Each structure stands twice: as C-alpha cells, then as structure tokens.
Amino acid sequence: MGSAAGVLLCLAAVLLFGGRGPQQVLGLGGAETASGKAPGTGDSIAEDTVVASINGLAVTAAEMKYAMGLQRTKVIEYFRSAYNQAYDGTFWEMEIGGENPLEMVKREALAAWTRSRILLEMGQEEGLVGSISFHSLLSEMELENKQRAQAAAAGKPVYGPVAMKADTFIPYYLSNLELALQEKLKGTAGHRAGGESGHGEPAISNAAEGKLLFTRISIAYRGEGESTGDSKQEAGELLAKVRRSLISGISPEEAVSDLKNDNASFPSLRLSSEKLDSANARIYFREQEKLYAWLTGERESGEISPVIDEGFRGEWVLAVLDHAGTPAPGTVKEQMKEGAGEDRGFKAELEQRVRAARIEMSEPGYSGLQVE
Image 1: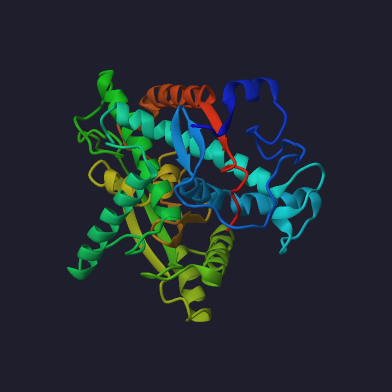
Image 2 (image 1 turned 60 degrees about the vertical axis):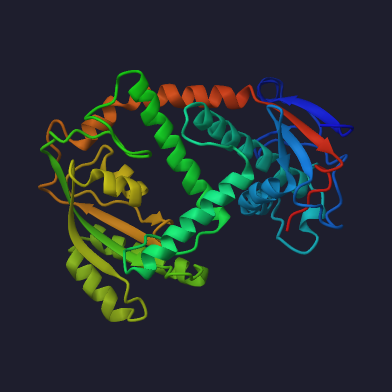
C-alpha cells in the first residue's frame, strides 16, 4: 500500500463484534457516526487510484465507483424508508440519525465487491478465469459485445441488449462464474450427473423422461440498445393485470386478448405454450434463469407464477403450470434437489472466505471517493 495509511479490517471480526467508525463494513441497518467522512463535493479522483485492497490485491477507484453505482439506489431507498429523507442535491453530504449516505454507500459497495473478488479468486484457482482484475472484466465485456454485434449482423438471435454495459455485464458474468464453480466442484467430487455440461449450466440427465408443460406470457420492456425508462414499470403493471385476471379464473388466452385490445402500445405482449424437459433445460437455465428457478421449485398443477423480471432479456414474464405438467420421477426438479447438498457446501465455503477476507482501505483515496 506504500505510504498510504491502510486500516486493516477483518470482515469476520466486524460480523462478530460490530466494529465502530467509518471503516466498518455493515449491513444497511448498522448505524455509525460520519466522522472522518469525505465531503460530498470535490474533484473526482483518478480512475487508477488505489482506494483499498482485498487480500493484498489493490482495489482501484474505477472498480469502487462501479460497485458504488450498484448500491446507490439501495442506499437512497434506505434513507427514504428509515428517515423519510428524499433524495436531493445535498443527499450524499448530509448526516441523519448518525448515518451518512456517502459513507454507507462506500462500505456497502466494498462489502459487495469483496464477495465478487473472492468469487473471482476461486474461479482463478479452478482455472475458470485467467485474471481477477477489473480491467480483465471490462475486456471480457468488450469481447461479449463484439460477439453480440457479430451475431446481430448475421441475423442470429441475441438475448438482451446488443451492447452490454458494466452494470449489467459484470453481474451476469459473475453469476455464470458462480454456477460454473458449483458444477466444477461437483465434478471434482464425483457428483456430476449426466456427463459433462458447459460452464454455468445444470448437469441434467438425458435419461429424464418427465416434462413440465406451461403457458408463458411475456412483455418486452427493452428493445435493442434502448433503456428501460418508464416503459418497464408500465409493462410490469400490465402483466400484473394479466395475473389478476388469471387468478379470477379467466384463461390465459382471454386475459392476453383483452389486454391487447386495451393496450395496442405494447405489441410485444406474447403468449405461448411451452415445455421444460431434459432436452431444453440448459437453454432455459442460461437464458431465463429466474423462470427456470420458479419452474423447478415446489410447484403444483395450475399454479401461477409471480411476475418475473428477466432483466437480461429485457422482459417481464408470467408462467402458468398446466394441469398435465406435474413432473415424473427423474425430472429436472428432482435432479436439482439431488445437487442441493453440493451447492450448499460450495456456498458455505464462499461465504466463509468472504467473512475471513482481509481488507485495507487506502487513504486519501478511499475518503476521496464520491458518488457520480
């Protein structure tokens, strides 16, 4: 860390003893004084400035700013809920109830980024990633965007935006890495089912004969290169209206037809009869992860899902499990249960390593971080 004043912090000690001061890493419920906090205004520090380290490896201002961006809304909502404090131009500079939004967003970001770094470390140990640097993640994003642009130019389907930004790509990349680690560690222990599967995919036996039949209803709220804006909320409300109609006993076909007649501005409203089985489970798992998780849970015939935000695809989704769709023995659902023990073991190791992580905050870089 050179001559910078580093404050050594062990997450395990924080969790056990609830340390004090602006260096602590706490949940949103933790209160602290804002002594030592940086002002909410001032010149932005250089992107390559070292502001902290995790297990001896530097954290730059660029990656902390990225991590802070992901926590920004969460902190704003916390102060609105806890103190009825609206967001305004002085929000990040104020102190209320002994808490300062700027310090809170920084410690929440550092805690979240610590987990991401540990996940990357584990991926590197298993040979799944070559580097854990923030720059390498951005390089992976550039490669992904290049492949997406080429696919779009060739007329091939592209799920989600053609050009992804860091706030969508990095969580997507880390989620796939976590799933790949689960699969790799299962394979090492001899628990992999049904042969080899790709990174981030469930190991599903080709011998499974059962299938889940369901009706899928969706509304896209984002086109290629478009932001969500107000259309996302409006689309979600429309699909929630469909769900209320389904609960009242109206058929999916009737509910969708009525909604289309009333809302011509949403031509992306779709209804289809689909099935989930061993042949296509990996496709659903990769492209519609939340829907897949709901379908493979403890479901009953005729059950209606909540309105699901498949953000990677940019659409709201609703599913109705057909009465004939109860899975038979050996299906995806049961095989997911078989792997639950191994998944819990992996997650326990991940969380233990996160709690034991050694964090140093480097000054004046850490205090100089601002919300942008």
